[in-house]
Length: 88
Image (cartoon, rainbow, N blue to C red; front, side, top):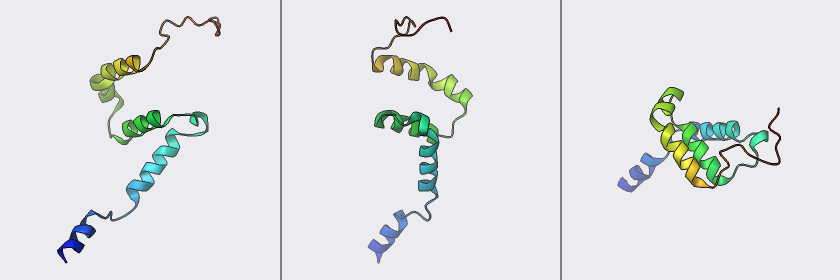
């Protein structure tokens, strides 16, 4: 009986969390972002699942996020690309 209570105590009462996750996934990965990699998608899902305001994200986490983004791979941060004209 004790083992049955343990099993029942970890079962979700509803599928609301799963449905919320799939809705969030569909919002993030739409037709225009269909080529997102798994790591990128996982990180975006994690960020969007937190209940955090834009101001709080900018004030607390933006410096760390930008530094991690810069270190992740070699990026062209000086906007000097040969294949894209600068005059728009």
